[in-house]
Image (cartoon, rainbow, N blue to C red; front, top):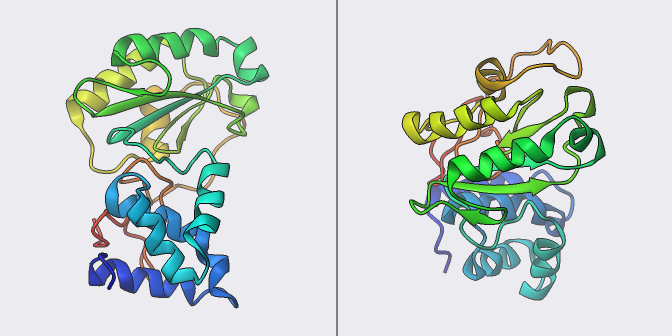
Length: 211
């Protein structure tokens, strides 16, 4: 019997229905499992195996290959700083240091409160707007060390239920790769990529309800 709520199961059914073979839904279902528990648990991977008809070992093979599937708690807000070559040349090492110092957590760690996790990341695909940072995979371009500190302070004080790339860019960003033309209405509600509810643009919380 599934341990997921009926709302989350309904969302899982809708995800599986999009694919000609249900095993192809493994990756979005892993994100759904993360949304359910805050990170990817062993029970969550077993649940995904049951939904996709593959073995837990096969699910784990996918989950351990991709870095965006977090198998340990990373806090409510996961702050990722790109340290690849373009960002590094434009000061991302200093941005990363500012994030770590302000959060009180080094790469791969979570602050004492369990609120903010910090990590360095490989290329985020925003080389023209380096240095690039993400909060729960919502992008900010042109971040300076001072703005990185302000970002952590804001997360700790405001504790937004949803983080949105347009708001983050306006508050803490600088030079962008190109002029952003399409406003992003959906934001992330946890340390996993934002994804829309079916038939709606409202973000979905961990319990499967719209927020």
